Length: 115
Length: 113
Image (cartoon, rainbow over all chains, first blue to last red; front, side):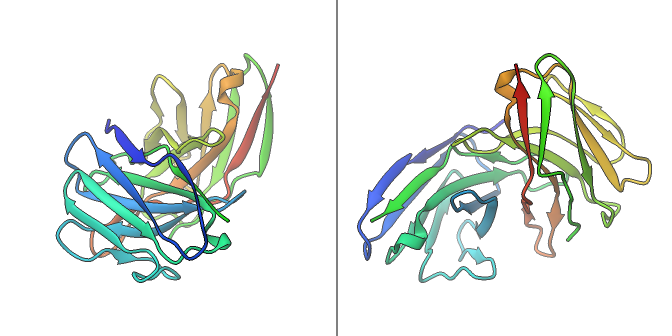
């Protein structure tokens, strides 16, 4: 199994500012993903973080709002830009092996509150 | 994408087996069934997965019907710590080889003393 360290665990931010969330994995992984969980809702995939290339975003999510970096196979960051109260959610990092039948693992999440 | 259908909530008495059903009638032959759970305010935890055969590990058993259109997660002796939202997910592989998970609403399991 992979051990994922996600920082910060929670933050309170002013609207209009940005928050960068870090995801560190204890082993090299091919696939890294970022999810959002709005209050009382299920998880929604934001994007796939690709090592050495631009992230692949899901419908409804754009790079200007959610820039992602992945400089190597063990680390990624997600920035939530120009914050508004609607961005208040839990953001989760996930990793998965690039093969069928391999389980994905999740970090403990970052709880963001925008005031 | 194959979609899943789960009951929104279930109760189970502590010490009894919890049987959580999932329908995935449009599943294709190379899609796996995964189960995760999310305890309040934590990241999802992997439980078990399978393709065709029944599977068992230290946490649970997964029973997949022969036509693969439905499955059941079994927690053999539920404890209060098993209270969580349980997600049944069919794993999707897109053309670029991105193994993403699509979460539905899940089943809120409440284990009752």
